[in-house]
Structure formats: structure tokens, C-alpha cells
Image 1 (spheres, helix red, strand yellow):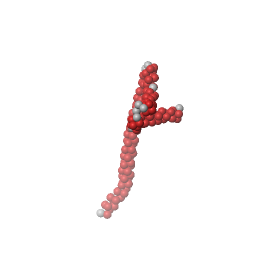
Image 2: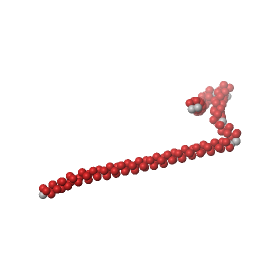
Image 3: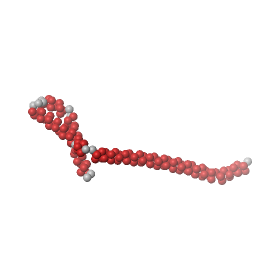
Image 4: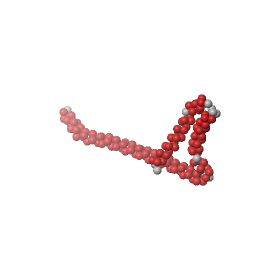
Length: 145
């Protein structure tokens, strides 16, 4: 009986470490393969995202080129009018501001009506947006010549 236990114990100690090492190597290889598979998935996802971003960028460039071609083919009056839309709106807002003050000074409206017109804050907000836009645009043009 003791010889049988000794034989099994000898066999287990001689074969066991080699089998354990092979089992650990197979586990490490499986982890490495899983890691490689995940890396390949990430690389393909990155390539797909890059292709999408590149496609969107190319589409934006195409739209811009089309708009430039359309502006070149448009009549001069249309091009000049399109460039003057923002300044025209600005002139109209400041004309409205001047007309309101002129109406008060000429007596066409009383102080209560003047207060209602300006106390709403709408005209004041529009004027501040316009001024901020133009000065912000000038600043950005100076910073990026």
C-alpha cells in the first residue's frame, strides 16, 4: 500500500509541474489572444470613425466649393445683397433706436410709452448682440490675420 501511494506521489510530482506550466501557458495565450482580438476591434473601429470623419469633412468641403461656385455664377447684385444682409439689419435696428428717441423728443410718444418700449429689454438685447458680434468679429480678425 505504501509503495502504491509512493508511486502515485512520485508520478504526480514528476508530471504535475509540467502540466501546471502548460495549463498556465494556455491561459496566458488565451488572454493574449483575447487582448489581440480587442486591439484589432479597436483599430477597426478607429479606422471606421476616421473614415466617417474624413467623409464628413470632404462633404463639408464639397458644400463650400459648391456655394463658392454658386456665388461666382450669381449676379453681382445678388452677391452684394447677400453680403449686406447683416449690415442692413444693424442699420435698421439703430434707425429704430433713433426713431424712438426722436419720437420722444418731438412729443409723438410720452414718457410712459417710451419706458414700455425700452423697459422690455428686447431692443437693448438686440443692440448688445449686434455690438458684441461686430467687435468680436474685429477681435477675431486681428487675432487670426
